[in-house]
Length: 227
Length: 309
Image 1: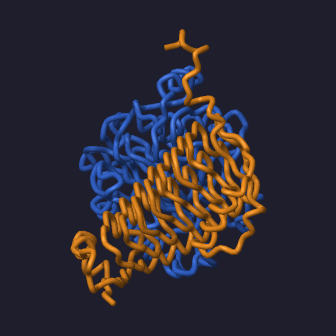
Image 2: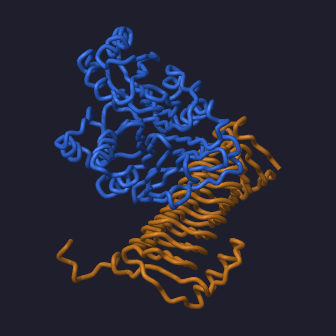
């Protein structure tokens, strides 16, 4: 196992070492100590390695991630996992705003709560939150699944496209063009798999599905004069 | 962008270290705003006396004999401690309006930074470490304080454009964000007779609170109504004689992290600002909710029932 003390090594050197790992690297397990809220830790990784960050992280930890698994042993700052492509990010504490923004793939797991704009403009990422999420979450969500074991804040899924939202608790309010949907067997199957992957013990049947009413983004001939 | 820090001490043993802790927190936030910096410290008060912090760009001449000149006008002893471009005036209680009026006559270049019984505000153009050093902030003790490092957006980089802003006796405000209706609101407030000295948006926010409170609102009520009357985005931290308040606009784009232990309540624009506080590993760390007014003061334990107090 490789251990890096971030305060000694510095952010650029640390990320450089992680970027140097190829698909067939032997150095597959890394620990970063003394994170102390630093920004951009383990950003832009592209190798099947596992990185554990000890302590809370600042902005954009694990941004643009591909293949790697990143464990944050603390809370995560704004924009964590932004534009994640693949791989996995697991946050032991809470996540700040715009978690997984524009993420194209991969999985983000939050064991605490996530803040506002969680999964904003998500494009295929799966996000599973054990606690609650804040307002304007999944705004303009296009694809992927957002699973919330607790409650969701105001304006969930505002102006969303084809992303799916599963909420076990209450939703404070739905955003424009977001509506409650029927839970069909295929959705139970997706949810069962995501909960298992996240390691959360929750019954899929207790969740409600929300998604796009598809009135906002489809061209309606009655509105032709408006263009 | 801008960076804000705040520290409210519960443990009296930490009071001699308030300035040192707050300075370290603010320096960590330097890259959120390198234009100017300021710190408000709530220190000791003396019965029957009040404090006024003033500033001059030409302290070598402006402050010479100022205490004697003011003593004559006020009719009671005025003591002065000069710290770089600032001077703390120790004046008889209740004489602040007289002193303020007299200052304008003595030297129009002297600006009032703060007034109150325990509040002192120090702010200048420059990096947090330089500003803190020139005023010796790290050596100051106190019960609570707030700091700000500015990335200018709405007005020029000047001393008067720096935060914190004094909103009333022992009250001050720092702001991260920008207000979009400040021009209109400035005109309204000036018609109401409120003094606004710059084109800065935050000064208008501060003046708005002053105006609300002059009309009988409590600070909590003034902050609550600011959610309706101020357009734009903001995270505000306010200082009062007894404690700290925090409010974020309903969209809450501007970051805010809080930490609480048995020894203190701390605020930072980022968690980075808090990492060297004692016992932070086991502190309760959370983000304040949008459109919610929070207060911590020395009389009560900080609970959500103190919201909008």
